[in-house]
Length: 471
Image (spheres, one colour):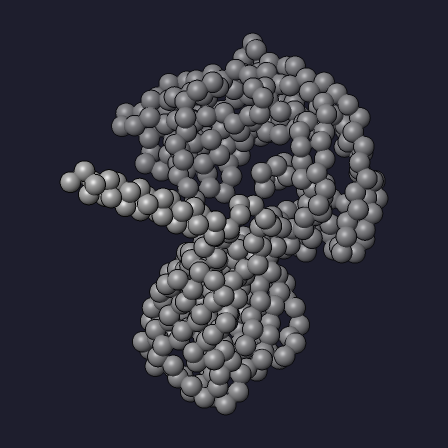
């Protein structure tokens, strides 16, 4: 019995040693940690039907790649051109993608399935950028190409949420009623590109990439070419400038705070807030009061700009902007001077005829001359631009504008800060940017161009800059 137990112990010990050796052996085949990082994106190895096949109407397409893949954000990235009614069903497993097409396909048509940046490998996330699979229901693959650039006309900036859409040249209402046959996204540099197009003429538009992809709201951004484009193997590059025909009016509530007043009415409160920078009144701009909604001024009870003794001053004017939500008091301000703005009872009412029920006095002081810097700008290259205007912008808002009539601009006073310089091509020479129109009457917007120069202006300083305007 004891001998049997010893044999068992020996057997168990031998088994333990064998398992340990096996584990060590398995450990030896693990690849070493480290080495160069994989930077190669997945690439196609097998396609059924094969890529660029002709004379087919597939219901299912299988794409096999060189390594395991993930597909991310397909809803945003995937485009089939020309469009079909039902989006294909797409699923990916391991290193393969399966696409099921449930719609009938048009005859003699080249279809491209564009995946954008949706396909990437599992381990390193390397992207198979702009992978496209192509086939034709006819006997050849269309080779038409068309590309260009899109910018926002008012700011010169890029909006990569917009898309470029193509519609048949003889259908003037297609942009209002129909989803586009072809569309292309805009990249971070403002570029768009179409490939595999038929050699046909198309109307070209830019619209937001929403569900409809139509121009069904005049406050939407839109751009258009004045005439249809004829697509060839090498189509001329086009520039498009997007604009809003009409601005959206956001109703913002005025917030009571420093420099704010609240005037009570019988049924509601008529609020306003003073808009200013740095606490004191800017010498270069009017005093601005912002209201919650449209207002009207009552000439029977005029608003008065006064000195500190409440003596009315001369040479001031009061006006409203086009929305009637902002009131401006214009006056040749002098530095470090105190003023009173007297708003009499009943001087302002809104569209519901709610009016001020008591008089208010707004007290303020103007900035000092030392708060400003002088600027000297030497310009070159502006002669190629029609009626050029130099724009000083912050956060895409124009803070100052100066018509360019010679190579040197001298500005005696300007508030300090960082400004991005832009150039307005003022076609109608009215001193401001004008939007376009799209409808029965079509008009291109004026263009604002980024100069590519940022300047820093210091207060109480003579600031000098050299600016080159490239074509």
